[in-house]
Amino acid sequence: MEVIFLGTGTSQGVPMIACDCPVCTSSDPRNRRTRASVHVVMDGLHIQVDAAPEFRLQCLRERITRADFFILTHGHADHVCGMDDLRRFCDLLGGEALTVYSTDEGQGRVRAIYPYAIGERPVSKGYAAFRLRPMPALLELPQGTIASTLLPHGSIGTLGLVFTERSSGRKFAYYTDCKDVPEAAIQLARGADAVVLDGLRPLPHPSHMSIGEAVAVAARIGAPATWLTHLTHLNDHAELDASLPPGVRAAYDGLRLKL
Image (cartoon, rainbow, N blue to C red; front, top):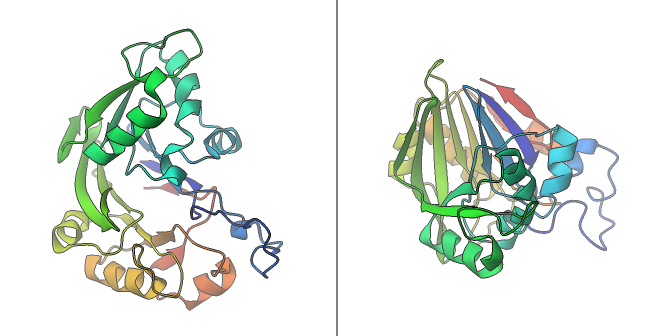
């Protein structure tokens, strides 16, 4: 299994507009964060999770050339606003619609933003087409399974995802954009080789976990490697990484995990 971090930043990205703080003006490339998403390759199956506003640029940077289906964790702008650029993957599927799994809230947001793309085929060559499907609790595939659970994120729920590759048995949990990780989600992630958690900033936030809250959740899950994502400009990469306990690291754009 391979996991490619296309983006690890918040809705504002880093550097932020009109900010000259030390992180936003840093020369460390790990402090340049596009909006959060990942690309998971499981026994040759390519799964794209979320599409940030920078999605096209992320794909070019990381040489993403295939997406077999798409999972939208929730319908907030920093996760849904790059979906029109999925049109190229519809072309590469021979002009077929791309299957999109999400929550009811996420599906509703896709219908509202992309009414022209809902259907079994693009309206014309080069256009996007989305085949919307509810994300099941367990999606069984020849290449493995993807389990899902709802995580609290303000007034909505975010899909927490746990990928298990059939050939290797490797397990990867992706829990972005959440204020807490309920016990059922903790149990679902147990045994994972790597876990990704929302760790917004050192200060508390009403709908995201702080760094301290994410570290506490990492200890409860007990994975050998945990990576924090959705990081604001209040986090200098080198300083944050050095402050974290063993087994917990700060993710960065372009990070690749081979599990």
